[in-house]
Length: 115
Length: 112
Image 1 (cartoon, rainbow over the protein chains, first blue to last red):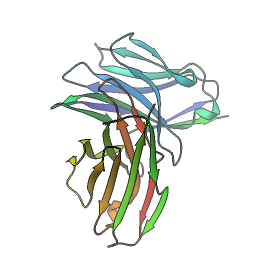
Image 2: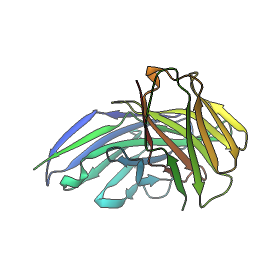
Image 3: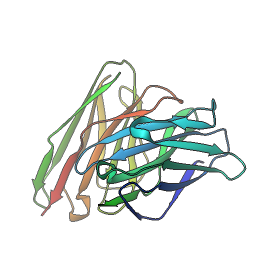
Image 4: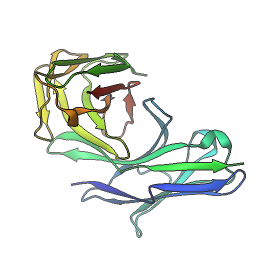
């Protein structure tokens, strides 16, 4: 079975600072990994996804994530935070489970950006 | 790409009343469909998934049920709501293992 762990329910950064949101996964099969962003009272929007191609994945809004199999990690980064990045971020893992694709989410990390 | 329509956006219901949330999908056929619930300060909990018409699986025993009467329609229901059913409900669609999920805008349900 797949699972993800997101370390830190809240992360606070200053505008212009590096953003680092942590995600570790567990999967018995090669995983597909995703990062989603959620703005208040909205659905989730895909930021980026890893599907066994390049280990460094670039997404929208300047975000990127690196798949590290040895560390079972898929941390999300952005070199310079912007006020508009304040939102909740979810890491997710996907894989076939008894013939059905199951998408499992972490508990989320709320990113706070201060001026 | 797929578009997920979900309604209503917000709903306030008394304890013991019935519930029906509807989700429809555009832009794809025979999708895998999902209902998630997001409680305040918590992650997304998978409630139900469906791989086809009338094929529903439940992840967590609870006060809710789901139905899929048409290929691109997924309904979440309850006969009698509990206070603990309050939350943000999201419908999602996946087209394949390596593809991302597309989400509706969600329904904020408050049971009073």
